Image 1 (cartoon, rainbow, N blue to C red):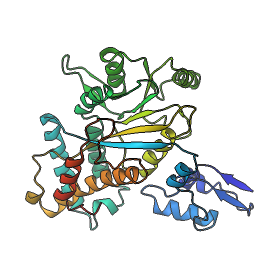
Image 2 (image 1 turned 60 degrees about the vertical axis):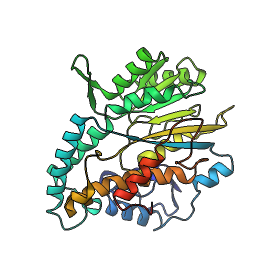
Image 3 (image 1 turned 180 degrees about the vertical axis):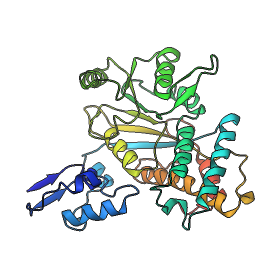
Length: 335
């Protein structure tokens, strides 16, 4: 019998050809079986393992049965600086122009081979992921934590500019410096630059409290358990559901003395000066598509949370009014 854990990886072209046909009994396991922007790979995978999902265990069931802990979910709307807003608008204009040449909406488009559009989307995603206001918001929110131990921070993979020196540094390093130098936490980064032995040591220090916080980019997305995590800040997230679903699974693991987890989600919306009613159809669809992907994550996280995202949690101010306004501006009230 073939049992494949994290089976979504096997849908990649380099793996599909290696799957043994001689084994008749096959079981694939995954929290995210559908491959992002790869319908063909998903279909091939489902066909090989039996053409369909035969059993599903939902997050709500896992929480109800005590397999995972309960959690509060708190989304925060982040504003771009004027300089960032200018770059964002220029990139959005480019994306809208390139998308207008395609016969389908950007959200459904096959980007394979369209390197110019992929590059523009990548640049805008990096801009959003490293928005300067996120670090200020993180610094503000830390003061509301009852305990600073077992804090996990997910960063973007881009760089930020130091306002005083003008030097650029990796977003993960700027976040570590903020938490260590400005707030005084015992913190370390957890990235691909650390060796396997170093990462194991960091996880042990995090669990026993020698380190209060870990700052990661993607190394804690999948396959690494950090059950002691009590508070998580998602400063940056891709639109790929696999990433944020896997992250949520890392955060909600049960741990002795852990009653619940708190997840803060940082959401960058189009600049306030962008008026949807003045956009042409392609520009509006481009902006709406980005917001819709962000709100899909909000909705998925909120569905199983102990709180509704527009409710106050532990005195922490939320962005409910901004979320409602955002849905109204882009005709997404149904979400």
